Image (tube, rainbow, N blue to C red; front, side, top):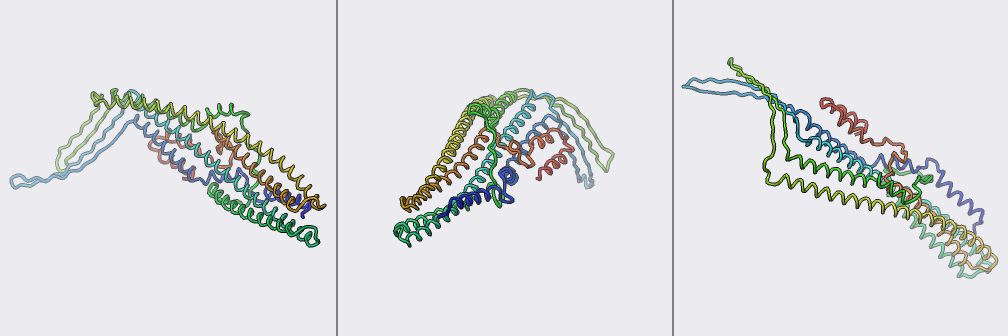
Length: 458
């Protein structure tokens, strides 16, 4: 059988292999790669940029609209057998600008801005889900790797137990039954190891899907993230910062703007119009030009109740969004409470498992020494060894659960983002594109936006 010293050496080698392997992937570096390689995140960033364009389109409704027309006409005419033809051209320029629309244009801008705010919160929600999935994949891969090493170590120990049982059988200290028990234990250990290796392959594939690249090895996850002291404090924070809550609040604001916009549709609209036109018949001396400037006033008189229906519909949707906000807030608070409970259970389980390992180690050492003296059977030794292995495996699982539960709490607060975690990535800044959309003059807008997209690598 393996001596206690040899077992300690094996355990130290296991810890050294997992935590100090050369070029080991850290949790933060894995999260950075998941952030950079996520197609889903890139997709939602593009959707946010599309929403920013709605703001620009709404702003353009308050600016003059200038258009031009040009035309050429070739005419053929025959009068009493005498034919003649003419060629004429025309050029026109017109402009129109809303002078006063009772706030409809500004309401459109406000509505587009609120839609952008909601899209930004949706992007944060997607970012959190991507990072949390990467954390789970990282810890599951590490857990599977540790369980494989534990299984390999346990198989070596069982093989030593089997050799020792055969030696003792040869000298008549134990029966053939004891040897068979050791053989059965080795077969069971081999089967368990095969299962662990299969789990490792699946964890490897899951890691590749979540992060984008496979690591050579994984390092220890490091310190746990800082969290509020209680679920009560955390719920208050989540109510102010969780992206789902903020998105629901944005939906309420959009519904309020839509009510005002629907009511404004029944109000008059005053537009300033201007036209300049020029026409010329090229094969004659006739030509003409005209210029006009006017103010138009328009207002719907009768729409069959459509405008009033639109107002009622907007109010009904507003009531719906307010109810959805309350439901979302309750759901987020429930998630926070559940996440804290999960973390507390995980920590308690880890502590109990550590105590179980200490007791199982003492029991195994004692049973093994008693077996040498003949007061314990081979079955007792094998059972004690299995109890110790199960305890160590449970500790690996418990450590994984504590890490994942901690970051899950962070996600329920709306704080599991690349910026909060301090990841070394080019964090997507939605305000940069939006600022260019709002501030750039139409004549230079295209070049400015191309510059922003180029910085984003699009």
